Amino acid sequence: MDAENAAAAPQHGTRPAVPAPPDPAEDAPTLLVKIFGKDRPGITAGLFETLAAYDVDVVDIEQVVTRGRMVLCALVTMPATRGAEGELRATVHTWAEASRMEAEIISGRGDNRRRGEGRSHVTVLGSPLTAESTAAITALITRAGGNIDRIFRLAKYPVTAVEFAVSGAEPSVLRSALAVAAGAHGVDIAVMPAGLQRRAQRLVVMDVDSTMIQDEVIELFAAHAGCEDEVAAITAAAMRGELDFEQSLRARVALLAGLDASVTDKVRAEVRLTPGARTLIRTLKRLGYQVGIVSGGFTQVTDDLQERLGLDFAAANTLEVADGKFTGKVTGPVVDRAGKARHLRRFAEQAGVPLSQTVAIGDGANDLDMLNAAGLGVAFNAKPVVRQAADTAVNVPFLDTVLYLLGITREEIEAADALDGTPVTD
Ligand SMILES: [Mg+2]
Image (cartoon, rainbow, N blue to C red; front, side, top):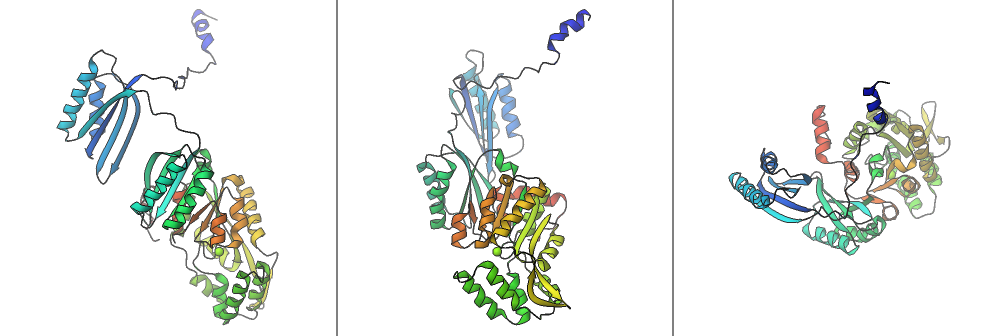
């Protein structure tokens, strides 16, 4: 080994020095520079060019633009040169005046205080979102011991969606505190623990009838068989608890006996997707999610939906056909409440995704096991019993609002659509 290599040897295989994390006790003097005014290009660059003359370091930067007005906050270290603070203040004010902006400079110590334990994302969906409900929600966050660290808008269309980053309150405590406000003010509030988990969702499984589509498929078939009233009577009996799902399914399917199976094409054409369903699926697929449907309805319709929408998984009951006619029976084991949860587990296994990284969406009592088994269960325009049991509830009739619960903004959705020229159809 020559001298040069010998000198280099001790460094071989060692990692480059990583700066130590900041000492929380560190309490060096800092300057908070706040700039407010009409947003236009070059303001941020202008401020930092002005500050650069004083050789200060950036500790934090935040900027928001609301209706064309910007607030830029820069937290910087105090200039090292004695007496330079006064000069810095004067220079920044001169620059701001020339740029037609307002400046405020506040001296202090250190960085933001440490955020409290217990962090959540609180997503609020309102249509509209009133000042009154915002007041109630934010007051409840405070009462639950939480501090709002950040607020930003996720969407202004088709609903107003706002996310609050909250620290200092247990997510479960916050969730029950806010559930009451949601009901009282007609808004949807989802509380999700902060952390990587939220960004790790990889599989979304949806119910079909009254979730991904606006219809109940058995009713569409029943209309062709002329037995809508009988089907409705059985549905009502099931809702009163007189029949379980399997009994009611078999009883309703029996009424279809003798119906020409060719009506399947008509029923497929009659199915109406829920507004936002295409946007939800398209966006999830772009993000690399796998998407599945599971239905107490029929493969005669779900197979077609799977193909049309490019879904990864589908499971449903199959209407038995003999000699071109429905026999009034279903083949194989019935997909019921337990079956839906079983299919969710199977999809997750096939997708190679742990259950904790799945999202399930549904509206009926039939969906409850699946909603509870998933990492995140979303009750979509659901019956009260389902709403109360689920992690979170959406009560606006737009399926793409589920994206906001995952922290995806309307702007991101539209930018991705614009990039590949997807016409906005729903
Ligand atoms: Mg349903």
